[in-house]
Image 1 (cartoon, rainbow, N blue to C red):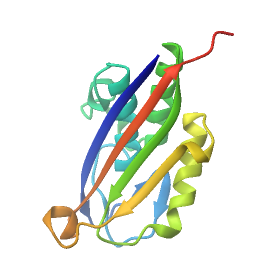
Image 2: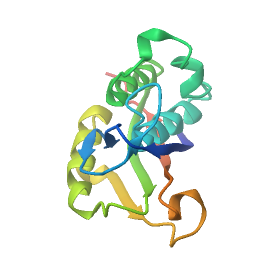
Image 3: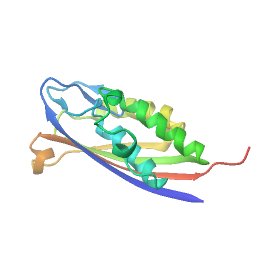
Length: 161
């Protein structure tokens, strides 16, 4: 049995914050604003898995009203959701994700993101696709005011041991 989930996340870009995507710190003048490390890519993947499990969204499980999640590394949240999936009898087959960011260019960071995410997702890096797009000067992304990420995940029933 297969389950598919879709995730989406957007964060405002501000001065004085780091820009973390897929667990990788990206050199940038602006960083993502948020309660955690504001890793939009990891948040989108987390939401995609939760969606495939019909288990709500990231805010349901890790609300920004809870001080324990303040500044937390988003890969840790993703790891908890992967545990939820495996505990429910599922494993990740693959992830396809897109980051929308006007600048900086992300090409040199993509492999590191794929490796970080694959490790937490318990799959090979060849099962994690990360693409980068710009907003072509349009909307908040194109104007350099926001970062957005979209992800889709395929889960399958784990083989009985």
